[in-house]
Length: 277
Image 1 (tube, helix red, strand yellow):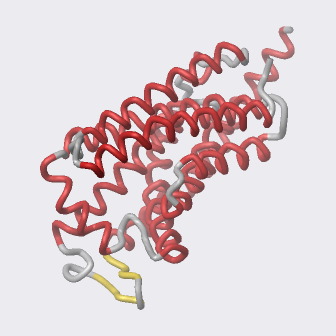
Image 2 (cartoon, rainbow, N blue to C red; image 1 turned 90 degrees about the horizontal axis):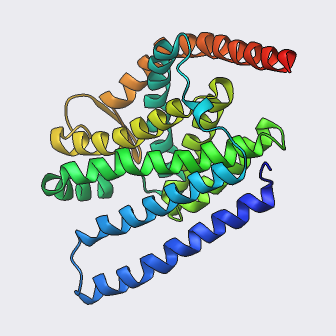
């Protein structure tokens, strides 16, 4: 039985409440000094394992085929390269919009300063949890189950909006919601035209990695004040922004081309299956 919107919302709320129930005691203990900062990682791991468990349980109960989303099709790697080029631009766009709306983003001065002070002692674990673990678990649930599941009962556009919206709300922090919506819409669309969850996972991993790396690079090499930059009021256009625009111009035509090819191949395969039935 494929899930409906009310089922998806119920499961997502349950996941959210569980995270709150686990997080609140940790936050209180941390503020009291009973726990160290490193215990935050344990909290992320607990939440990730929970999402992963719910995702696989939901796959089994909803009759969704997870294995079909892992098939490597022709032009997969070429399509992937074009996706990464577009993704770099989307990361910069997300930071810009987040800063525009909330005056706080992954490249804001306050965030950059905190990252430059925090990363050196926790680089590997921070990157592993933020760039590998979290994206995999979140993509399996929000794209693999929510989007793919809703697409069976509703149009892909409705499924895309609902999955991206829930994904954004799940992050709670308003300054992260803009980026979450962008990731949700883009990775959901890529899953729609390719039916490959691996591409969605790579998009999310790459996006998170860029967020951490760009913040660290800006702080490390002082990109906001040196090398190349143009200050436009509160926003600083630096070499990272210029590079993302150039890469978008190069990647977008290939992305559109391979998108059409992947979608056409997917439709032909689906028509072939229906004909055999």
